[in-house]
Length: 328
Image 1 (tube, rainbow, N blue to C red):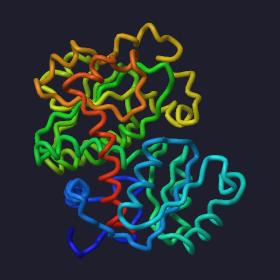
Image 2 (cartoon, rainbow, N blue to C red; image 1 turned 45 degrees about the horizontal axis):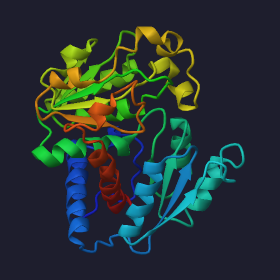
Image 3 (cartoon, rainbow, N blue to C red; image 1 turned 90 degrees about the vertical axis):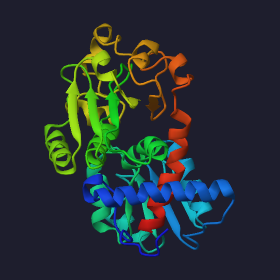
């Protein structure tokens, strides 16, 4: 790792605030830290540092990867569960941010609403890391990209298909948004495949198209699974609700979404062996987990030779360690 830390002290709320070079630096550092861990080489880059982890809802992968990551970096993580006294409505975010800034070196915040993450960042004097909200999931997107990047050592011209799939409940657009923000800066051939009416936010799409043009990427929208899967390097299985229901879906609502009201019209959107067979032979099938098995994707695909879901999940540890090591 370079001794220079130009990202130190910055928030990570959205990939819009980071350049292509900075995103690649984080990916390179994640690979370097992964190698050090596998070789048993110490890398206590954050010795004496503390991270507060604020959760508005639980997540096995997010909590474990951040907590273990801080431990491996020589630091310490403090877990605040959803029912903790800090919660919104129990104490103003201004007070919590101002107080925690005097105790810890960074705050990881998993929130229902992006506006609350912005509010936290406004008052905190330490970096705020977005660990998921309805607007974005930057940590997950970086982990997803690490799989093809580590194998190919480049993301240029990688055909990365974000494939909508039926889910019996509504999911937010966070992962999709972060994929658009970062993927279009990395030279990828990014494909969004989804049914009519499931468009991401128009402003987000406009931003992504601008970044694609600037960085030599492509962004294509396709409303057919088979067409989208053709020649894919990566198929990322991801159900989501239309943008107008995204926030409601984040809080377990979103029952108005078309695929919830009329599931029979959408259940054919499932990633199975046939869809995988249309892609490249070495296609990488991703899912951020937890998966709606049998609805979004079949068991056979998830357990098949093209599945990289466990490698992808492991990357949460390595990419978040890279983020923490630069920001804190």
